[in-house]
Length: 76
Image (cartoon, one colour):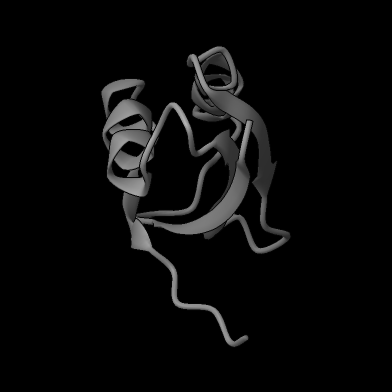
């Protein structure tokens, strides 16, 4: 297993009614961990890169109803 962390921007901040969507997304095969940013404007996803690519994670989260946009740029 190759763990990768990618931060995805959200199209809009999550509210209390949309938090269950994030919880349900945790059950997506290959996703190990989800962490919402303190500002609730991005989500960091840890996933198994041998099973998923960033585009697969983006599509899976979108299909689950999580309003994700493109991966966020990070300063290395």
